[in-house]
Length: 523
Image 1 (tube, one colour):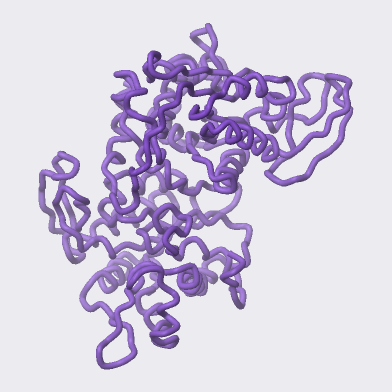
Image 2: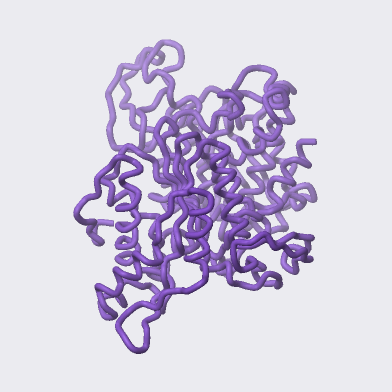
């Protein structure tokens, strides 16, 4: 049942927008894939206690690549290094190999005691403390979690190999119907380190939590017979399959020839390479953003000088104690954001009291059915629908109106106690012929978004009108510098400017004030 469940969970994510991808780079052909981690990845002979690294081997062709699982139970990022386990691993790494690094479960333990003395300082900073280790009797300088991960990544890169950072496996801990999504902030720290160090990031935590919540408490309890942290063979295989699915979404990705028949049968999660944000601190309120490339562009790193406004809203609010989680994906419409699974994955990360900003429209005017993107929606906010044989996915699909997809997101957010806010799509840089004014859309997506918001009594930010008025004020010459392409995608300066408009509207909802300015050069 579990394999069918994961296949169903991942299937909508297979078909993606080509606008965000480049597969020109040669695929990875490692001679070995190494795993550095703790007991949740380590190999055991006990069927009731197994780490994901053991079943992971079966997804690869042993004649093409060796899966070398060096994970060891009870270790933190610190003790994996200080006990020499890391040095033994790195000595065997060869150019082109892949090294998956996953730690955190044990890093929150005491820094110094006479039992394990394995804890690391929280965070990814440069702080340290000097101790006389009660376990070893030796002097030791203990660093932050980030310090040890940086050391591993640097040494993998020095071997001309590929480091891959992964967030934690999921523990069987529940609050009502929601399972814990990571212990502490280790998943977010890994995410930060991946961006800082330019390494791939696999969000195993949220992928596994999504799959486990579909099984429910009783179903998940059967996978964790020993305790809330360690699973048996089937639970280990669930995590292993999700790891394989995520690896297939790297850019460049592993060559298909390294997989076994079992591995080739795993549906890819094709979006690993964009490193979508995760929730920094589960104890804080979150503001999520979902939308298209005008909210988060491409890889999210400013390629081609293009940025989305969702990356800078928190700066205008003084970086408050609120999470800002930009889950927008370039190239998608309101329809394909839902059908490809992005909406559900974002929704599953939300909790009651969170806010979600929803902005779609730029891509909804595309073709309803073609073999390129198949992302269009029926125009308007009515209840029309059309059944198609999707030329891109090969699946039968019922396509609805733009308004229907917005209503679906509004309803599903509210059902979870999340506050939806509809945003009209930002305007394109198209000037009227007879005046230095931005052309406004009429009887189109901005107006339809407003109508849906009004009819559903949902908060509404009219970005189309507000941003257009701002561009009118600045004039063509200054606005030109605010775009990274001819008319659709903003530069960093333009994205920051639009984010300021969003922040002005959002601030009263959060009880926050907006700062006077955000310097482009500081971002």
